[in-house]
Structures are given as C-alpha cells and as structure tokens.
Image (cartoon, rainbow, N blue to C red; front, side, top):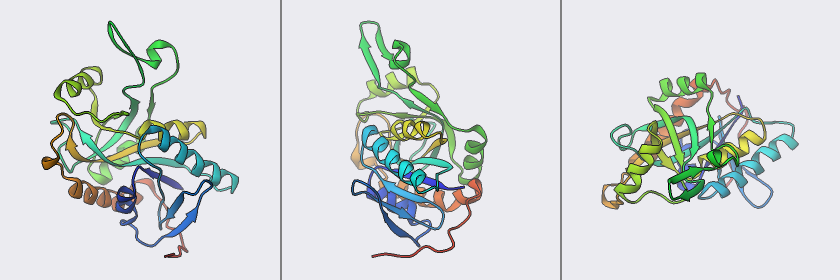
Length: 238
C-alpha cells in the first residue's frame, strides 16, 4: 500500500519521519518538498484546510502523473482532545472527518453546508482500516472535527460537543486533506495525537512534546496495520 501522510507543520512531519528515519527529499511543483521514508511519503502542507487541500492535491496529482498513485492519504499531527474521551498524549483515529464550522450562523443556530444544500461536510474513513489502525496503535475511534479557528472557550467546546457528540478531537486540516483525496478517488483517514484539551486555552497544560512522541510511536506501529511494504532504496539527502 502506497501512503501519503499530510501534516500541517514541519514539527509534525518530523515526528512522522522519525518513525522511519531513512528518507529522500522529493521536490513537488510549487516549491513544496515531499519526505519519502521507508514506508510513507510525508508532506508538511501548511496550517488550515485550504493549505492542506492544496498540498495534498499537488502530491496526489504528481503521483498520478508519474504513474504511481497513492492507495491511502492520512491527515496526521497533534490535536485538541474532547474530554474525557481523548486524554492528553492519547491517539485518535477518525471514523469520520467532519468540517465543523463550514456553513452559516442563523437565528436558529449553526447550519452546515450540507443542511444548506451546498455539499457534503464530512468523509467517512474505511471501517476495516480504522479498526486495524486502532488495534495497532491503541487509538480511540470517533469523529475528528476540522475547524478554521481553534476552540478557546468552554462555551465553544460545549457547542461543538452538542452538535457532534461522537467527536473526540479537533484539528485544522483533516477535511481539506479528505476533500483532495476524494477528488482523486483515494480513501482518507485522520490520525491525531492529543496535545491539549478542547476548551479554554491553557498553554501551561499543553503536552506538545508528549503528543509528538506518541505520533512517532503510532507511525512505528502503523505499517503492520496497513501492510505497507518498505521502500527498498531510499536515499538520504541533506
């Protein structure tokens, strides 16, 4: 299985590549760089759903033009976790990837673009694959929300929980990655390590280092779940 992993920032990309350190750097159109490890191609595409969609689409298109298309796209990184279901430093894998704030605010409350008739606001991940990833990594399974503005208040956290009772985590890129994958006919899932609780911002309580370490450990375990054959020749570039 050929797998593209899309993160937001280089620190997340490096946590993924640390699971399989031997890698080559492959330039993509537009100036981005793909990091090719023994098991995964990893791209730090930028923060937010638009950057994630653009970066994922570029990598997917380049692969198709080269005649070597991907079998799976994974949106990966750290995330906020909804408590108590997703404790800090734990892992979450998506049963569904949901655009939680794509829609309109009305007098009756928030209405998604799906409710407004403007298109889907979620992508389901393959059930068998989600189970395999959860078993291999110890990740909890549930919805992962994509937001353009990270939650910073208890009121906002409660609103999201009321609208999405199956949500375990929120991040800012998954839906963009899933949209690009769907456009290319490739399945997608999201794998997140929880760095902070969804709710009031308390940076002193964040555990970013622990979450990044958990992400590395997850990607060490992931190849067995995905049955990913290693790349026989992967050159290191500096």
